[in-house]
Image 1 (tube, one colour):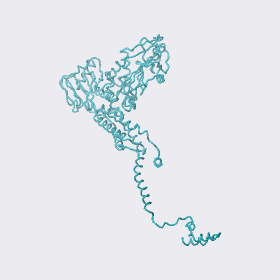
Image 2: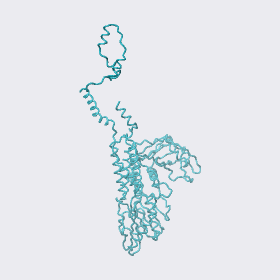
Image 3: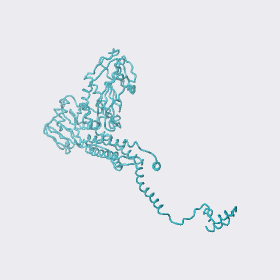
Image 4: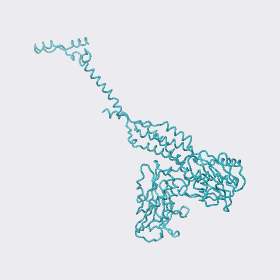
Length: 580
């Protein structure tokens, strides 16, 4: 540096001497640092002072103190989800689908005086057990325990696996000739008189009595059926297997038919709630106006149905009367039938969504399902209105259903005929009998919406078959079928929702997961495990309740309002916002 300064000094041109004073001043002043080294600052000759060190330390300390606050302000709250437990539940359901063990008890009522042979009961038990392979693949039945009881004039004998509390001697073969309703209750009493909890046992009685009416089968309102007539052992075994597998386990659904267990959807909201909305529609109030006593009569008739379906759904009932509600489809006049005809091809256009203001329910909240049941009263111009089936015959109920929506009954008022005169808005009321008949049709439609048959036919049975109708609208063995399938469906839906939620949370690291969501997932897993445990014990109703709760909690977690606040911005974007 010194040599460079000397060279720079040598090359500096002489200053002009304008005056002696200026020359003396320039020669006496020391050379400037800039002149010596150009733009380079002079070297530091002493260490930084204490003031600068204090300033630097204070800035560093302020940054360290504020760093946790900065990180906290940019933190996304994520409650931990039990992903391992969700995956474990999914594996269990895939490897061991829910199945419900049950029992089959065959009772042979013989009129002979001799004592039954014990070995015969064990032999019949083994023969009945060989028919279990006939169960359909969609069946929810698990392990089936078979037992046999033989009763004759000399007493009773049972196989080693007897599972039904049969009261020996309380009923005889001669009692089977009584009225079917009476014998049904007597048989229910002989089997203990209660449905009870735990594994369900289905009883089929073979009453060997010749009443002159031939062989017939009666399926009762509870969990039993009976065969009356002279049948040999081979025929009896065939009838027992037919009744148990086709009806008690499969609901009478034939191969290729739609119904429960055939991939249909249950008409129940994801929260387990259903609203049954009943509407009376006056197409043209200028012709006639009808009202009904639904509050007093309708709800009284439907209350047993609501109670029977409570393990499956929490049902609310509403009713209303609407006016000026014409249909959307066209009908044509048929002189042979004496009225106007609506073909099946026009049914999809029957519901007039523009004029029928049906969605007025105040009970349907959240994800509840609303099923509409409509009584349509045609105008005088189109009255009477008949529904024609594809085979050309008229519908006996004059009604139809729309899956997952509800059902419609076309009700022609009394005195309705071609060319009916207008009543000019006269108010009338459906009689109690007319309302009850209409509600019976609606109950049949509700059965169809839940995957059951509105009524049964003896298809596949070689003998006459009769089904007793329960005041609840559903026999106990039908409710068992609904409970089992509903529990399985809800468990699978619950697992699918939880897996989707877990996958969503893992794929979005910036997603907010509230503590409430984590708690709902844990409660859903607990309810699902309880449903599985009840299924293994054969308790269908309790399993259905727990499975419904598990699905509802899973849906609540997945659709939690906080999830709607997800932001997809990058992490750098957040830091840029907070650093500005």
